[in-house]
Amino acid sequence: MTILITGGCGFIGSNLAIMLKRQYPLYTILALDNLKRKGSELNIPRLSEHGVQYTHGDIRNAEDLVFDQAIDYIIDAAAEPSVSAGLGTVPTYVINTNLVGSINTLEMAVRHRAKLIFLSTSRVYPIEHLENVAYVEGDTRFELLPKQTMPGVSHSGIAENFPIDKARSIYGATKLASEILADEFRVFFNMGCVINRCGVVAGPHQMGKVDQGVITLWVARHYWKKDIAYFGYGGQGKQVRDVLHILDLFDLIDYQLHNFEKVNGQIFNAGGGTFSSVSLKELTRICANITGNTVGEKRVAENRRGDIPLYITDNAKITGHTGWQPKRNAAVIVQDIFNWIRENDKILKPILDA
Image 1 (tube, one colour):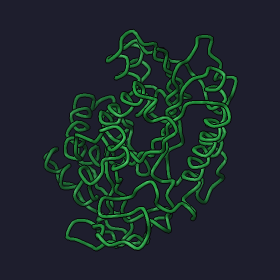
Image 2 (cartoon, rainbow, N blue to C red):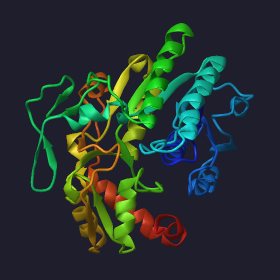
Image 3 (cartoon, rainbow, N blue to C red):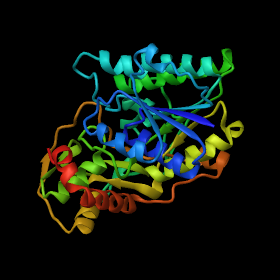
Image 4 (spheres, rainbow, N blue to C red):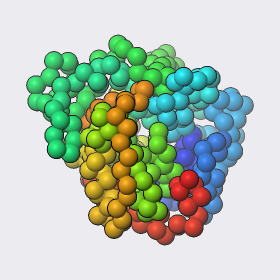
């Protein structure tokens, strides 16, 4: 089997490439990346060491997606992943990467008759609707109420039938548009495709920033004893996200690759669920316990554009179809990231301690 991973030097792409090569040494794993994100170049030696073939290329350029060998599967992990991308600025890069790049990838899949595993995002769900889910403020987090007025939301989180008829960010719009096109290609070009709407994915080798990779950022701040800041919702740090360990995402992708007929044509929400959900305030406590360091906590009451009070994935559909469910909670994720930073602090300090 030959598998191409776009965004192959990114956090998700590089980890999936290496895990697949370890699990299936006889598979050919190709990784394509434009190295735009700071720190992604550090993954080239890792890929090479594990026998993954790296190619410098950009999904925005169709000519970069020409491969001589036949490709059986494409895992599309290439994206500008920031919700704030294109908000208040020129949105050209996020649109070209996440939408034009997806079109180029879809056309490549058709040429190779390759099956596509498309990594989408929970941010396809509109901000206004997510702001209006019924929740109560607890001591350390916002908590979903059992009784909700909108479809697709319950005490278990957000399901696939949650309304999508409002604005969601330029980032979310490009991913939703790509989902729609992927399904069109599936139907009219007979291209196998499964779509995974992932929540926050975290783990070692993620170059965390404020707008993407916040779990790594929080651990790094504690490791190097730098202040953290709670933005929005009164500055209390009670916003909640579910967090999926990269190893749990690998388990899901591994299943889909080898049981594709069971998932073809499906859209799944895939995240940490209630099992691995955490507020920023709770994350601070976990980081302090694991690193042994306490840091200053700044508070900014005003909401940031595009932020939401909470998001938890309802995994009922994907668990029902595949039996998959996350195994590693937020504390395990923080511990694994801490171990990685501690073992590589000299290399990571210029990137994560900025």
